[in-house]
Image (tube, rainbow, N blue to C red):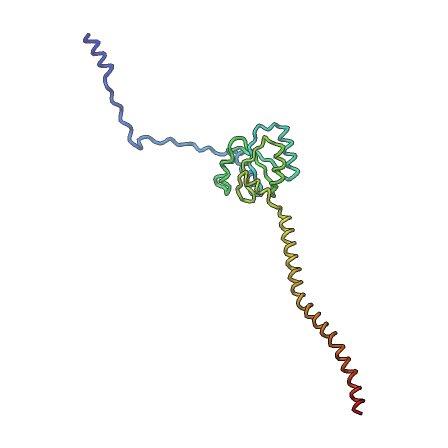
Length: 220
């Protein structure tokens, strides 16, 4: 019984924890920075040229579009000079933080594609997307302005630049013609009054000339 008690005491004996190592006792592990591959650098340069040359960069989520539908979508967009670009999200996250387009980072989650064009073709893009429900419009950068889906819809309702230019030229032409007519109105009105005055004076002058010989004869 005494031996069992000793064994029980030995098993249940309290063992204090070892003191923690002081700060700086261990050298921190050096995290290896992953170097970009040649393909990633090439895609990054291509992405940089896309952002610098395009006035419309739309981000869309691709929900399992098959190859045939994607080919048809590319053909429809190409009619309006809109191109589809594919870039891995890793390349996007590497490029965006150090660029003026850093606010677009939250858009690149999951399978995303880019619709790019050198000129804003918002109406044409939305028209093509009506027949492609697999493509979900997330946002876009149009003329260096970040727009949400609602902002893109509002942008599409704006008149085109040609329409605005035509309305501006028409308004300026109307104002110019109105100004010219106002400038010519007073001289023309004054000239008409003078001509009327001259016509009114002509009968009076002729009457005086006819009365002058009669007075001379009566005096004789």
